[in-house]
Image (cartoon, rainbow, N blue to C red):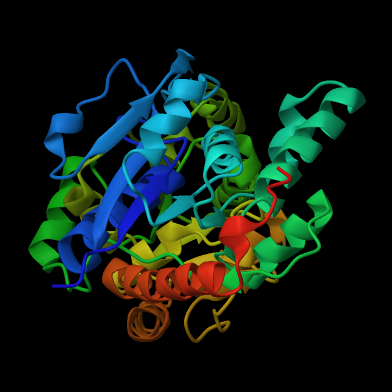
Length: 399
């Protein structure tokens, strides 16, 4: 019997930390173990971890804890013994989902023993460097650190063509494979009595348009534009509700902003929900998802909304809008509050159009995690075969 491959799924974020990359890692690990091979999650320690909930191995390495709403730990992979811990596990391939601490950890492993490595670039890190690193010297160091982690991989994957542009801004000159993310919400039609119960719970009249924003509550997702667009709609006499589902570092500022605009009566603040089935019901109760982010490289929420035939409003030309056709599988706007307001004003009362575009999105842009991870597993085998067939295992390692 042929031995199963053993894959390390490296991630700097894993539950109880909740964000897009955490979601990706959970689905990769679950589907690989269930259908393809043995997968072990490699991630920093977290004081709130509950790893016994998962039916596969989770290897936690040393970290520094940062108290925050998101609950991030910063990996600290500098003990040499940690590298041998991974080597001794006999991995056939290391797959990192961020060019940060865990990617550096995999570099340290490769300095001792060469193991084929894949890196998926999910996030436009130039935004974080610009926002969070105060000095030019620090910015240069951060870009160099990320670039070395990226270049060290034997193959680089991106979730969209647009995210490759972000890589180029960091200075990456190599090739990249587009490997899209999937959706863990099944295609379904949520019964009207359930969507009505969601509206009743929050006092939403059944005959008015309902928008939803779902995701991290951080300004660089262009939430400010959503709120200002809603202000324009209210001033023009339009009635609607905006469901805001999620949590994040800027949520208190966001609340203060919509109160100062005078649109608090139009906002339904749901906050943090981890129940995936319940989140899908909120999508289904909404007429359209508002996702004007130009930060995201793929936007898991777009496919999540499509799973229950809810269309999305996106910024034309953004990474999240890749593969979307305006007024066929989604709606486009410019990156401005006025454009968002104009498009919404035009379509928000057209239930037939919204339903038609949502159904088309469900049929044409939805991709399950089973399909996405299946593609990745096929590619793993090629990466491994190429690694050994050209003798990379015996080459000097320069990272």
